[in-house]
Image 1 (cartoon, rainbow, N blue to C red):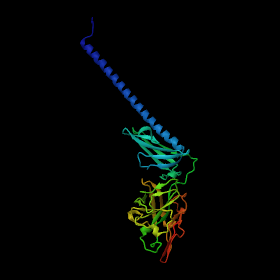
Image 2: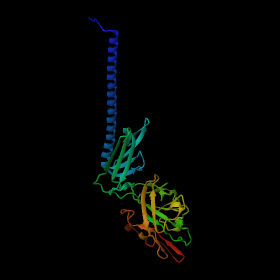
Image 3: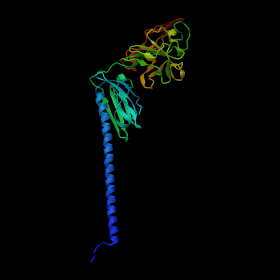
Image 4: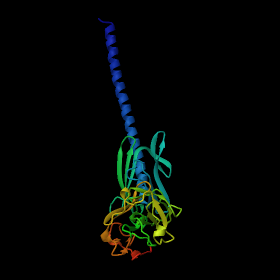
Length: 339
């Protein structure tokens, strides 16, 4: 009869118990790790919900978009005016090496990798003109690459406000003589007129014309276009105050290059585009004009292309016409009256 275990049996028993303990430890570690990752995932999802819920709630109470970052900005910004008149600014900040979502400068949730805003008008067309934005596409990517997308509209009962910077006049085919009968280069006689339909002053310094040249000079002594006023833009060598009878209220600005079109050239006399971009290269207004819209000379009469209404689309041919014989010459006398 055996009275106890042999040494080998004890060793085997210890090994078996060790293997069981190791297996249980691995299971426990795996369970803890899984729980930790699940908890982290839930926390990230919860942070994403906080961000989207805040954006959705505020935007639905918004009356208009005041500022929006470019659609190409991975980390963007958005400012809206609420129906109460208050302003909300949504952005991001860098904290401890990671980016976090902020509202009016205060951290709300995160970390995030991407926050992108894209604006659409009533027709669902992409736009950067803040006054026409009625729906916003929001793309949110959290720190673990978890991606969320949503569409949110401003209050539907709020009527769209007529607001923005508009191209209102284009002189693409000027006469060869100025108001004093002196011969001039066509590039120096061309101009574009902008109207500030917003309720705030806009700094036009560095704005880009036709994607090729920027506004860098101001004979008027300022680059600030106040609400309800006009700015007239000419090329680098233009002298519009001597070439035309400019209204005294016009803000006169010049670009970097002589010609307002591409490659320092003159604007086309038949079909062309006038594109105005802000200093971040967001398209503010664009007119793809045709000589059939107006602004084409008839005999010795020269006209600018004049917009009828800023409430109608920029590329509606019926929204443009000849100026009322504002720019013409008879024999050697050139007469110009801009309205």
